[in-house]
Length: 374
Image (cartoon, rainbow, N blue to C red):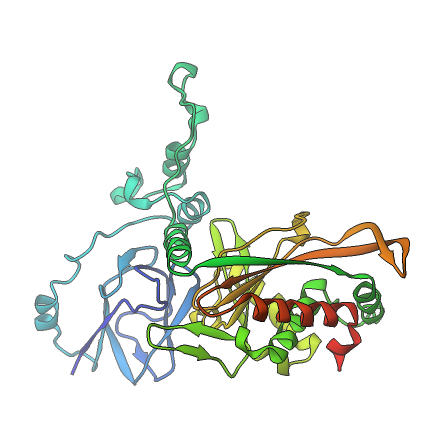
């Protein structure tokens, strides 16, 4: 019998999905595991696989159209099967507003955080085109007397979700922060030595810090925990979330079991997932399951900062830039390099002593970095 396929919820925050591309046409036979379509969520573009052999009998959401989760996406069944009763039963295409938009206009709207509900299309059949987005967003085309003192841009879906999560985190978990400064000269020498091999990809300071943060967790296992209403969960695997800045918000790809992986494997996975995140091609399972988060703004010249905890983690590590400065070494003032680290903790789970012990372990690993390689 024919089956209605609904717009799936491909992430825990997904509300609306957009069909980027159909890989099958109406009447085409489908095998189990075939890619039916590419669906854009609030986080990434993901492939939708067929779960059984069938024929594509109906497409409810065309390429470029957006619709809420559980809207009718397609109907699969046997070849030439009568689906009129299903169409009537599900009131096809009457349960959501269909949005027709060109790919270029869609990208432009996404980049500028413009909600498509606010745009009136001037293309064929009301299709939203590039100039509609530009007209909506561009104040320079107005006469001087009509220009506003500010430019209003509606919230993107991802920005709304980030706002909600950060507010909930700040309200639900009592934050406090611990600060430490680490001498980085030995870490700099180690990285330079590793990167002397020209035939291999370069290792970044962030790669080394992520590895060290996982090893420090291994020495301080209480850090690797989450709060629930009934209990504290102590996680057996150390999965590190890497905060990545996008044009319209923040996303946190996850590197699993960091403590068990080599430095080069960690470096490769971070690079790969950052690229996928920025291209919106990362899968939802690559954004889930973190037990600890690292946020590094050192490359932006930030000396130090505090972060809001990425729930359900109990801690987040904020990493500042490497600064050249006078330091005291064996009662002598010498020129060295230091970085400031901030550990923000959920006080319901992590007491000050536990957080301090973690930073002590992290500092030792970074100042004696050969231990990271062992």
